[in-house]
Length: 191
Figure 1 (tube, one colour):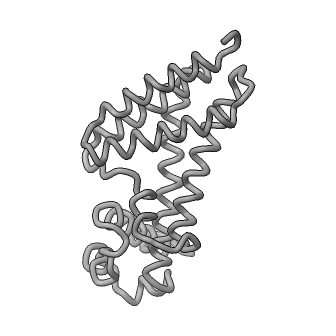
Figure 2 (cartoon, rainbow, N blue to C red):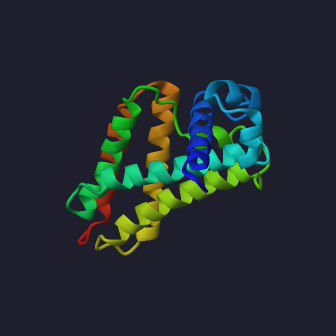
């Protein structure tokens, strides 16, 4: 692909991601994508077969970018415990950012009824990556049950995201972090 082709594809995906995050998949029609991106419909169809392909590609791009950001920021802690607790501080910074509208993957998965739909599969893949990261950190602790801790951390992360969005309460990250501290204390050796 040449640079112009890559630039056009990126423009389509960036615009689609913004529209999906703002309004949902069903509200992101091809007419709105053409109007908002400034890319001709014919050019969009040169890159993607249909709206579903655009949405799937945009969500995959968001997954890569979000996970890289989340891991990079969370990994600024020195110890596994600090990195685990830092996940909630990172979430809080996201909750307090302009334009926070919850989790794009939870939001879009909620729009699709079929569990085999590509959008639901992308959402599942994203949550699995988040679980895998929590498991990676939990496995670095001297802990006999890293899988259980990782799943509990995922529930705290997801609960904080949902509460921050639905209730408009960024302190949900602080509350989840406090619960994570208690869990870490209970799972540390000697307890």
